[in-house]
Image 1 (cartoon, rainbow, N blue to C red):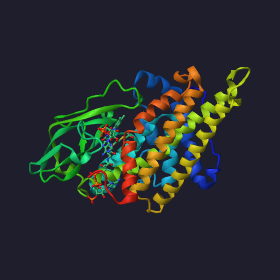
Image 2: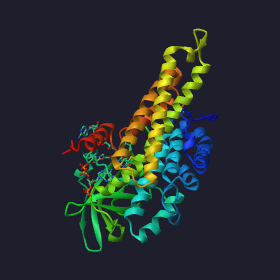
Image 3: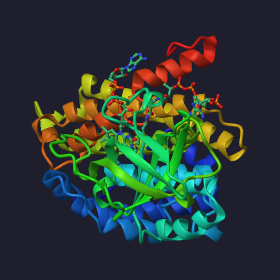
Image 4: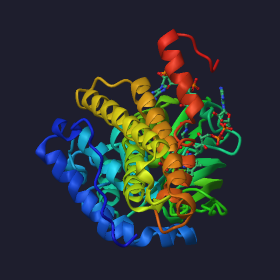
Length: 392
Ligand code: TGC
Ligand code: FAD
């Protein structure tokens, strides 16, 4: 879509809740998406190709690790700014937002939060600038929703550990120079470690045949007796709370990102409804089409307010993982609904690459599944409100 005229809906004047700086950051990312993403993304998605050039571009724009302190290359920004950045990136494409989410929340965050000072200094500036791309390996072929059951193992060999196992469905894997990987030690404790491309026995085969997130590169991580130096282990965390803590940061970004995809679909459907004539009048004049638009903008508005509130709690250091889970689930559900309604409103044109709607709709099928499925997030809220654990 070379001629990108996107304007976001703001039915309840939510923009008034943002600072001037936050709006400036949002608009800078929006401008980048209009110039660099919209003109190319449909072609890359149709070809299932990863637009590698976006990695240094996103780094230069400050989209990698925006909340990480500036001394390590991050942006020292607040969580609303981070959310707005993710909203704008996913407005362009969920795969672009995924690239940024993985890099910032799943690779830079654990190195910053759980890493040694040497690890921070070695990896964070290069990841922040986009010189290096990272990936995050938690999911395994037989352990997705239940990562606690993971089979990947490390064995202590003195100055190094030997890693065996495999990870599946790993975003960025085929292009990553660095992988943050989670595996169990001999005592059964989950440990985090940093792997680098080129380590003997470490390979990243590409996953083919996706109908969703086609412009994002997905792969496996295969570990065949990989010697990992002990200085590559993340020293300051053990147990499942390590990877789950990273997921809370990424899920927060997804909550905002999905609203961006929903906004793009709503904007497209609204414009189309005013221009498309059937039965001698714009289809937007028909009651059934107005019902769709009214419900779409209502759901988007509710999700905007939820994100703003959770973002405010994040800034105050008060947001719980369960609150973030609710925002992730809601953003995905809203985008799922809005993208599908928009696709219907565009009729046959809705299935083509002339408009971004079908691409967003297909992307959201991944986004509603990764970082915890819709049902897993319902159970997290269920556990939070009842105090009863449905998983055990
Ligand atoms: P459970 O016993 O409840 O918890 C174990 C420990 O972790 C703590 N914890 C959290 N800490 C921080 N943030 C969270 N969100 C946390 N949730 C739990 C918890 O307090 C406990 O700590 P401690 O000190 O007592 O040890 O764990 P469980 O095994 O019962 O699992 C709970 C469950 C099912 C909710 C969890 O396993 C889960 O969230 N499953 C979903 C898996 C998932 O989301 N995988 C995502 C993989 S990465 C990905 O998809 C990237 S896509 C990237 C992209 O392209 O954008
Ligand atoms: P399963 O866990 O097998 O779930 C199958 C179904 O069972 C789901 O509907 C689920 O909700 C349901 N279910 C499971 N347990 C319960 C229960 N207790 N109660 C009720 N229902 C239940 N992972 C990474 O580690 N890093 C990545 O970068 C990454 N990127 C991804 C990119 C893409 C495009 C995709 C599709 C996935 C990615 N993932 C990544 C993996 C993702 O996090 C998992 O797919 C997700 O957690 C679900 O796991 P699963 O696919 O094994 O499904």
